Amino acid sequence: MAPFYGYIMSLKGKKIIVAVTGSIAAYKTPHFVRLLVKAGAEVQVLVTAAATQFVSGLSLATVSGRAVLADVADGSTWNNHVALGLWADAMVIAPCSANTLGKLAHGLCDNIVCAVYLSARCPVWVAPAMDEDMWKHASTRANVARIQEYGNRLIPTEHGELASGLVGEGRMAEPETMAALLEAHFAQAGELRGINAVVTAGPTYERIDPVRFIGNFSTGKMGVALAEALAARGAAVTLVAGPGVQATTAAGIATVRTESAQDMYHAVMAVEKDASVLILAAAVADYRPDEVAMHKIKKHEGEMSLTLTRTTDILGSLGKIKRPGQTLVGFALETNNELENAGKKLTGKHADMIVLNSLQDAGAGFGHDTNKVTLLRHNAAPVALPLQSKKEVATAIVNHIIMMRNEQADN
Ligand code: CTP
Image 1 (cartoon, rainbow, N blue to C red):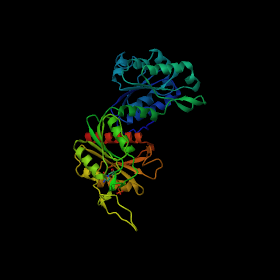
Image 2: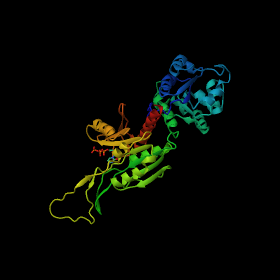
Image 3: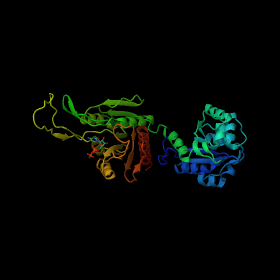
Image 4: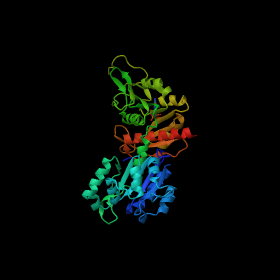
């Protein structure tokens, strides 16, 4: 599961109803509310009578910054549940007791939580919390299945110590886990629709003669994952792929195949003008043979040397012509003085962000399906992401790009 970032702003301005019912797990709900509010959401808390035996309305009102509603007749009118059902972008019932689960499954409506639930037009998440035997009871199983059939989303319970003193299944998910689900839900909203993006991926091959080249071990997996993550958010992506990069069938991605650094440079320059987001994830050769032999070079006695010449720095070239509204992201693969070297690339190449890959981390770098990166930006502390799948890393990078672009738009 994706971690909760808290700073990617997909929750900013979102209207969320948090409904609390009678379970000891309610002690975690103020923290959950606090995470949502800190991430920019507006939170309206609802409580059942039983909930207030476990958590105080005052705590919930303080962390949410709004009066807690406990009754359908709260507020100025009796029909606040209808207005709330229309107001919310999301509703989360956390914790959801066995009793409330049963009511939701059968359409009962004897309190404000059930009334708002029945009126809600937004997605509803249900986070059950109960002792293991209750959780495993056939009637609970049937109720869980039924509320999911109705289109509600279940936040899976966790295994661990229960309030009864037993250890087992039935604990409410942690607040960070629940917040991450909402964050990811709102992040998938197509924020990059109408935007063109360019991603470079994979190695380059610099020919020595018709049968040999200078290359590297890059597979292009990270670049492909980035192209897919951008396309998933609605961007029209041009993937400029080096040799051997796996094809992607994801919608919204046009792939241009290239071989050498020079090919890649021309392919990028052909599309950069229309692009608002450019991510240079390819492992581009810094040098190429000065001359490419027309015929296969034959071996002979003694040593042999090749004269190499610098290739064009694609990222550096884009940095020089960067225009307002373009977000330029580069990668740095470092083995020592990582932060310092990556920081030099950030300023030297006029990038907006450098994704630092350290080969010192197990499971990171070429060929792996996982990666561990640190994101460097101007005037911001480096953000070290955990070891995650390349897909998750790509989503996190794209989240940061969206956040940066939102910040720029706000300024
Ligand atoms: N890059 C590029 N064109 C090149 C070389 C690199 O676009 N000809 C991009 C890469 O895609 C990556 C970043 O620049 O985004 C990496 O910077 P670079 O200075 O090439 O890193 P290293 O090759 O690791 O360089 P150094 O030898 O300076 O560490």
